[in-house]
Amino acid sequence: MNKLHTIDTALTDMLGIRYPIIMAPMFLVSNAAMTIEAINAGATGAIPALNYRTDKEFRAALQQIRDNSKGPIGINIIANKSNIKLQEHLRTCLDMHVDYIITSLGSPEEIINACKPEGIKVFCDVVDDRFARKVEDLGADAVIAVNSGAGGHAGPLPSAQLIPSLLAAVNIPVINAGEVGKGEHLLRVLQRGACGASIGSLFIATYEAEVSQEYKQACVDYGAKDIVFTNKISGTPCTVINTPYVQKIGTEQNWLEVMLARNKSLKKYIKMLTFYKGMKAVEKAAFSATYKTVWCAGPTIEYVHAIKPVREIIQTLVSEYDAALAKQESKSVEA
Image (cartoon, rainbow, N blue to C red; front, side):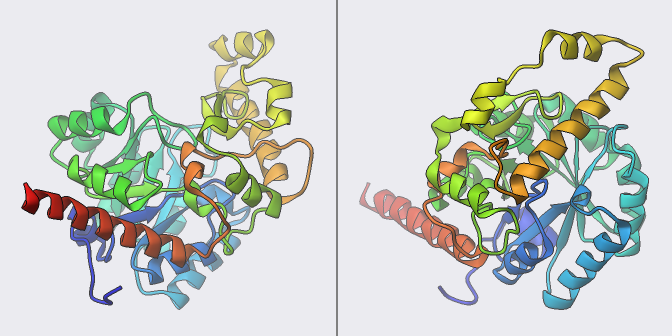
């Protein structure tokens, strides 16, 4: 591949990267080593702030990335009130001057107001044009269109509907999340009007990921048909691999969990407890061999056929993109 090769979009212009690819922030999976490799391969990577137990560890990871790469670092912050570390995470991002923040699950107003004076970009996860307009009014730099093919907390609409809907609703760039497992899929979402793609599940089965070998191998062995939604982890539907254990416990909350979650005075605390218990279960499964396998992943594991380095996955995506574009252009000339 030509070293000077680039795919120019609004995202590459904003972040100063060669390829419009964000290695998506994945709870428990994303880490400094993965992000360094993504940046050095010409893309960028984001890490959930919640992946670090202490602020000291968080700052050390950011410094490690800075010391070993020259490119933009992204951090994902959960913006709703259930995130008791929001203020701490935001302060660290400001102190370490990360390049962009991806907000999820809540109003990004406080985060945008704090980041704007520092020149830190803020990209907001959205699933519809109503929320997209709200975050644009608040000053977001871009929206991330979380479609129905995304991993984690997916949206209800496919990219073919969501991207055009958001482009008609807002005047800021739209970044696609979901449905991109190959280079031709990247070409497709860019041609629909997205300026880039946030890609997560492809990178779980990588050498640099520190999750268990069993989790990585599951992403190789299972496919799109094995992905199901469960609301037992965070209280909000989330995609997981349909392992025998998931089949055993079911994917719906029981009657007591539902009743407590609807109680106005208890709702906030029940959701926090559900999230805490669910994340602990996911954490245990991610880092050790256990029969209680709750592995988060999205449908694009369909395109994961081996455990590979992060850099190779990005290079393959770009090569496939180039081939798909060349094929299109060849057909256009013939026509």
